[in-house]
Amino acid sequence: MDENGGSGTDGCPGEAWVFDVFSKRCPSRGTLEHVTGRWGSLTLGALYEGTLRFNALRRRVDGVSEKMLSQTLHALERDGLVHREAQPVNPPRVDYELTPLGRQVTEQLLGLIQLVEGRMIEVMAARERYDEAHAAREG
Image (cartoon, rainbow, N blue to C red; front, side, top):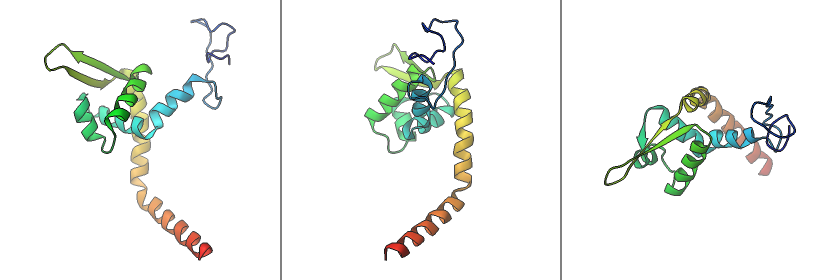
């Protein structure tokens, strides 16, 4: 793969592209980070429920700062996962929604979220066993 993520020598459109998220120079790695990071995954999940304005989205993604949500939305918009539409009204109104690609990615992400939520009893039990074992070693 070349530095642009393509398999060709000049990165021209139309060439066969080969992406490998395990390669540090592959552009897919950045998108994966945007999607699977704490704020990215929560933002995408919230937008799967429907179009939201910034403040409604911020309330839905409990704990995210205005700055982090703004940065997250910019990254997801740049990746083509979120569409931002500014309405020419006073006061200004900006709506955010998933693109078709964003919906597809989020459907996969929601499967993971549901799996994690559905197995939290096991996770919490594992944490408790781990903490007890490590406390016994330290004590």
